[in-house]
Image 1 (cartoon, rainbow over the protein chains, first blue to last red):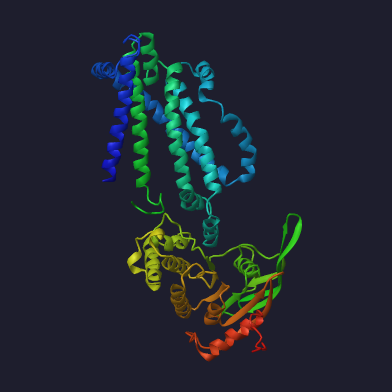
Image 2 (spheres, each protein chain N blue to C red; image 1 turned 45 degrees about the vertical axis):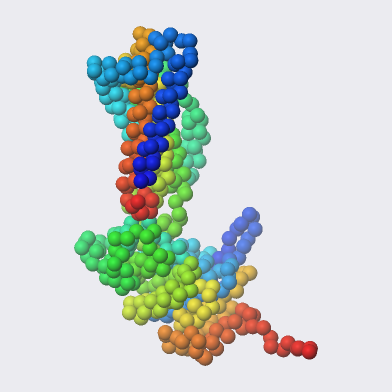
Length: 254
Length: 256
């Protein structure tokens, strides 16, 4: 029942969004080449599906995203677990992290393109940077915030490293780490498009630039919609995975 | 001789000021004894327990277990905490097995030992349940099973029943006495509940705050599974009340 209601919410919400778009299209003076209607965007979407460009570009983008995001999450979590247990070391690492963190990953873009050239790597590096800091910092704070009683109990039972890390500290910190991983997913997806707009000749971001160059606003908008839908899909998939991990909510399987 | 505590004291430096949490404690505890550390908050009873258990050793005097100075926690002496300390991502079986995992025991043997103690604390039907699905009393039973599973000599209990309702608490008090008899453990039990101390202890260590020290050690000369309303029970309780100056003088004059 709850699920049905939420599906209803989604449909109504999207219908309103498309309605506003259609209304703006009717009211505005722009030519339909520059500001296409929802229907025109839909037919452009169909065109892209039919000639295969959409699938190829999605596949390219997803490949870059998967490599950049997963490698970033793994390295950031491992580093965060270690730094979280070494407050003395983290004191010296933290200032540098705080300096690098507010720099938009796109600011690195020209530098990365100069170093690695155009292709998969710049987009992957951007995604890596985008996901890295939120995951690292949330892991460090998660490890620091775990209930000290878990450590006390482990000490009492003679549980030593590395068992202490993967049997006790990681699972205890996991809910908060997962939170960081989840937030980073959205950020990383946002920066994938930015990365591909500058540093690549393929992928969804490049498709936007390509559509602009060819003055195909209908393809441009269709691509934007696809980017939004994939972002939503990734978020949903992660939510489903999180729910399936035992103990994520203290073992309550709801 | 099991535990020897000599002139034990603990001082902290807090904001540049020295603070004495525990002062000049002298206490010998025999094997198989049930000792209650009783006192109001701030009397150093938990500090003393943590020191004997090795979590925070004393910085004056000495605490020896079997002739060896206590420096860090050991699997031979397991502590049970007020908030249970169960791992919420592990079910009951896995929680009880935790302490066995760092020993060289086969998986089957581990399961067998865990099952034995889960049954001992009466949770046979909850092996696959997660801590959050259990009541506070049941969670504390899991913690007790987990502690017993590693076959310790001493059980330290830090206000283990303080968070439970009165009826559950009394049930668990009986259970812990039962287990104590069956498994022959030395138990050091911290509480601020006078009745609980009188009901459980062979000897009650009465402690007072500012600074935390032992005021008196009261022997309870009644056989276990005591009658909570019996004369001898009330007499011991009375004695403790007196030690805490909780008895009102009966010399009140009435003017009619």
